[in-house]
Length: 183
Image (cartoon, rainbow, N blue to C red; front, side):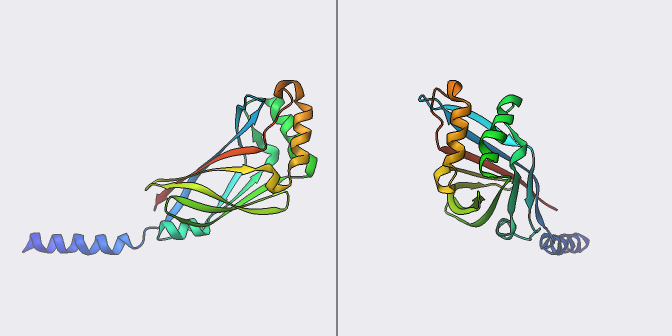
């Protein structure tokens, strides 16, 4: 009888507490990969100031639908201070791009539609999406022309002409990871 009562109590408390779980974002990382030279050599980096806004939710889908990201471009980090200064001055500031914003619109079948706002242009980018219990990963590519960033691309190509051998590519790969938890 005591054993049955204990099992019933554990079962009820598991049911009650399972509904109180709130998913949230513990941390995030964003990696970008740009390309230079006719051989398309990769240059990787991050941004040091990436703010993730979200509402805790009892479901992953609810968490996802409330998530948006705000990036401060002055804090670009390619692990090369000279390159970072050129990216800020000769790329982002050429057109006054101080921030980039992203908002998750929907997910399904291994893809996510993400609305990215850069240079006052909003564009929905379809990205590969992989969700695990403790992390969500988004991978995709943007075309700088879609965001009217070609003047900035021309500027950075000119500023780095020798290093880039006259070629800077307009596609940029993105990988964004959200580490999640249930509290």
